[in-house]
Length: 251
Image 1 (tube, rainbow, N blue to C red):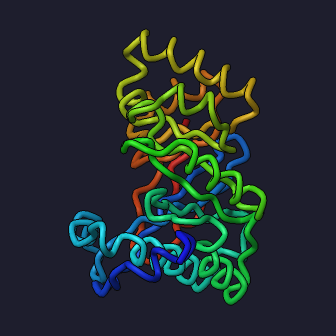
Image 2: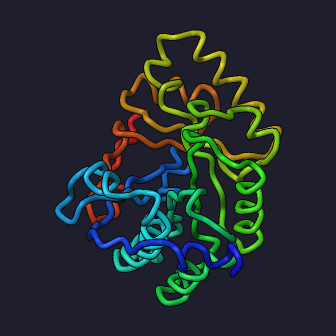
């Protein structure tokens, strides 16, 4: 039997109930929500750790599949399609065996809940060692289907620029450690300025995440980045999409 069905054949069920919170990614230039990122939570809003601590190698495939469907279903129920905002879903590359086989449940959910593939961003983090060839196959397949792809926490993981040289996603989310107190750190400002210029030359959209203060937000705007995420604008809302009127856009 081929690897295309390894997750279904060998994987264990994920039986722990969970839900989602949503945190907006805001276009501060256009003053609109660019996307809502789905973040796993317990069924009473408990933090992600309470759920992720029950995920292991055996049930990882089932958990990843359930997260995708849950995010799409809940976002649709919360009327995401009434706006132009996208839905951003985190996925586990090591839980994808064969991209076109493992995407079937996602596509079925998109059809059921009337959410076009073009409205979905798939994020992965470079925080764990990855098979680059396998990851490139996943991203290529997803983009062919119509999904957008994103590297999350860029700059904090194993591969960094080497990963970017081998594959160019649609979006790069800059790790919050580079953003923290950037207004008072010239080295961070210089690094971000040149990183943004490089990504622009590669036709990659930049999102800065982890913004907590007005000063950080102003420093980010000075680099030309307009897509922002962080507690300084809006915290994740449990089973709710934060409307633009509740988002701080003071800068």
